[in-house]
Each structure stands twice: as C-alpha cells, then as structure tokens.
Image (cartoon, rainbow, N blue to C red; front, side, top):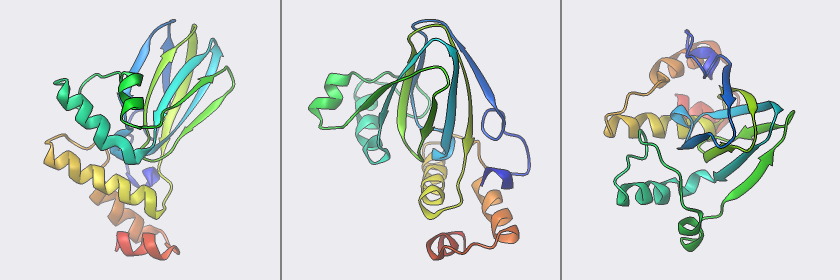
Length: 176
C-alpha cells in the first residue's frame, strides 16, 4: 500500500538507519498506522526484541494511562512482570547480525541494543484485509486522539482503488 502514497515518507517507504550503542533503546510502540516493518541487523552486535500481538495493545495502552504516559506519543518501556501478571504473552528474542525481523501489522514492540549495532528498517503495507483494516482503524483512532497520521489513508485508498485490481473479496469490500 505504501507505494500508493504518492510521495516519500521518510523511514516508512524509504530505508531508515539506526546506529546503536550498547543499552540504547527504542521505546514501545506500534508502527505508524499499524503497518508492517522489516528490520535487518547489519552488526556487529546483537539487539534484544520484545513484542506483543496486536490484540493486546488496549491493555498496554491502559498500563501507559495508569502511569500518566500517552500510548501514541509518549516514551514507554513495559515492565515485563506487569505484562505477565495480566496474562499478556511477550515474545522475547535476540536479533544477531544478518538476522531479519518481520513485525506484523499492529504488533506492539520495543528493542534494546545488547552491543554496538547498526540496523536498517522500513515499513511495508501488504494489500490485504488485515493490514488495511488495522491501518484504517489506527487512522481513525489517531483522529480521535488528535494525533496526525503520517500515512494519508484516504489518499492511499483512492489510489489503490484506481490503480490495483483487488481480487481478495474482503479487501475489495473494505477499499470500496
């Protein structure tokens, strides 16, 4: 979908570089408009990733609110014990040099550098019902919360409808 934006969105439909020192952190977040992302560690050190499936984001948002932090715009790092007590499954893994991490649509995640490392990342928007629905839901949620969406979903929808033959019935119905 991001090829239908019609302009460059730095770090989303272009490559972004992260140069990390040991202990540096990328706070918890979902990608802009819940798009998927690709992240490749080009080394030399490792990164530790934490992620939670998309359906748990409201609970994590509640944790943020209880601590006076804005989920969408604030800087937050979940306390793992709080997530475990709330029965929120956390995926935790090490990304070594050369490893590619795929973050699915809407996945909540946060990262810390274990060693010195460089990562390249960008977003992707597969044109399927799940990705489209999550992108639109976040577009609308951003409006409610008065946060500007970085992806112009109405424009993307019109461009996709005009230029793509959508064969999946669910995606077709949503775009229509």
